[in-house]
Length: 403
Ligand code: ASP
Ligand code: MG
Image: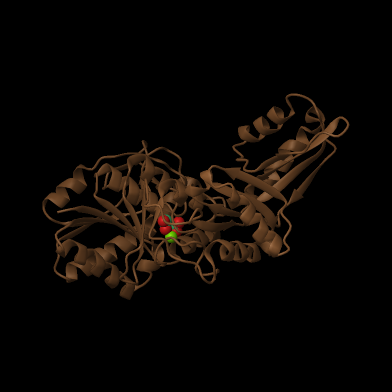
């Protein structure tokens, strides 16, 4: 008998019929002789609707009260699904994050799971009950409800799987697995049978929407066997694990696009030691994450440094740097927000030098200009105009995966 943690996303539980469907998947797994713990997200757009309701009342509502509100969406799904399972005649109990022992740090709105006290779940499993747990939330040291940040239910599920030493963690969603590109946008996108944690982590961080990247980080850390699959189609999904069988000739597993990117360029910066340190330490003090950095070769006694941040951080970054214009020593800042990052990911790249040039060739073939490039052992990212991004993704995908 295996212990399986299953997670169902918002679209999978969006209405009564879909909740019945989820109840069927859970009870089928249970009837096959497994213990099941299922983590549910809020139904459909519930979380967005709750945020809108809060904004109507108080646009500056405290994060504590926001968490109190947002955590209710998951409670609704779990209670309804438990009722569906009850009606089917199976023993079931739904638990909130805190009843399930999820302890988080105090960061309302973006809490991190610190530990899980599994006693209650273990005792419910011990009496053969199916256990449903609200995703995306826990309790902090003040015994206040906290939420884990948007999309956090994946992380709840993986954390539970790790704490319970589950045999498998299945993430049920509205696509059939992890694809070589977004199947809703790229024709010819193919489902992958398997992918490594590292590749999945890059894809999730680079804009693929299928898994919350913190959940992948955690799965790797605790070696949780993950499977991403559809709650609508009865088909095997994509397995995420440490090592995968080497597939012939596939050095690249996917192409991702991220529009949440803005670029700042410090123009005519003094060319002397300590400048990069000054610029980036100012930003890090404000918790602004910098992604791609490019420094030009000095001409005369000036150089340029450009770098990218999340779009939401663009204004704050500009302000801080402008406040320190004198002491840093630059002429002006250029800001662009109409850019996108397109990336290819694959563990096989390390020993295949031709991969980057194949990507650049595809982009050139589409007559698209690259503005910045960044590489790591398992990815190549380029920055380009946002309006060219979909075309670039299509061209790159076609080059690596065919039509
Ligand atoms: N309901 C939350 C959200 O929409 C958490 C989740 O779906 O994972 O962000
Ligand atoms: Mg959701």
